[in-house]
Image 1 (cartoon, helix red, strand yellow):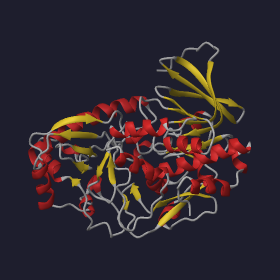
Image 2 (cartoon, rainbow, N blue to C red; image 1 turned 90 degrees about the vertical axis):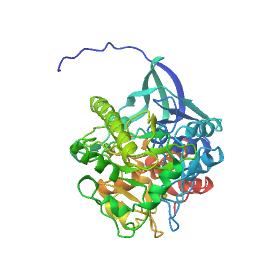
Image 3 (tube, rainbow, N blue to C red; image 1 turned 30 degrees about the vertical axis):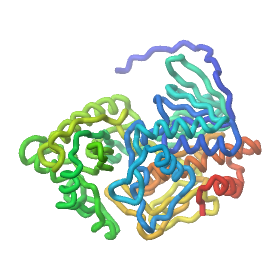
Image 4 (cartoon, rainbow, N blue to C red; image 1 turned 135 degrees about the vertical axis):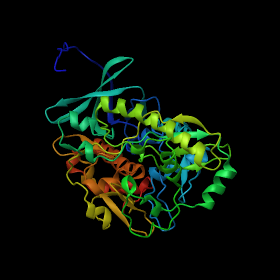
Length: 456
């Protein structure tokens, strides 16, 4: 439909003026807000949902550190703090395929609330959706939000785009590129089930243990590994769905239903069911999101029926809950002063202006490399500074990079690394009244070290 209306001009109330404004509270946004507040400035954190955490809470992606093995080099900082705080508050259990803990998506809402509440100079704003940037030429001065309270403006000295889809940068006129829809990583609808007989389920896993080599079963699940992953245990479920297709319970074209489970609980809950993979979903298109939310839930019904019929211990399972929103892995990337490359993430990229490190963990576009050898790469400050727009930083999965580097930097723990670096950089920029382009990376690194994050 090409019909349009003209929205009348109006005055918008400024409800807040702040030093640093973080838009989005997911793995890239919450660390940005916490680190900026801890660096000594006033921070406002805007989130469209009713909880903090983004993919970790809203989507239900509970395996933040599922890549961790004996030789994995850790990023530390807020990335590690999330896990440790969740363990302390009883919101984490041992993860099935690694030396990490699966963070409970519901329990982490309480963890995030506590972390935010502990910072006296951090002002939270839930239930507010970003609508538009407030611009003066090519300088961002704040944002406009929409909520039950109406349309409101928030002004800030520095803004961090942690939306995951580069919404702020894109609408501010920044340089972005979007992966063609047909090439995007699949979206996922996460879910959890209850009523599992844990003893029988574990017996079934032990009698037919799966490895990462089982992912390479043809079609949708062909992957490239380094070879070292092929004999490592994976909580992979595919055979039940192959049987269901053969028996006519699942249509043949849905051979994409397969994937991993996160943890089996004594209570009979099987959590972080990452089994639904939806090609063709554009996370920047509301109509596409609507269609795939509904399709994803439809496929969950089929997956649960297959598990009941063909998986030991699952005869009496029931759906416990869905993630609150579909999980998106791939949309826009911001063009930054430096864009990460495949060579950087595969060959231990090193940078003088490093703001954090991340282990050699690549997961996406048919590649799975687990960090079992102590290799890691650094993330430069320039990677979170968008071209063209002043007073703006970006954190999370939309930082600059090519296709394969995105398969590394999109991961939640890496988003936390760029988020902590962005928060500190924004805070220092405000305190020194210096342009983001003129910051000395050594000052950022000094504060990172103070906050317990590794950048070297």
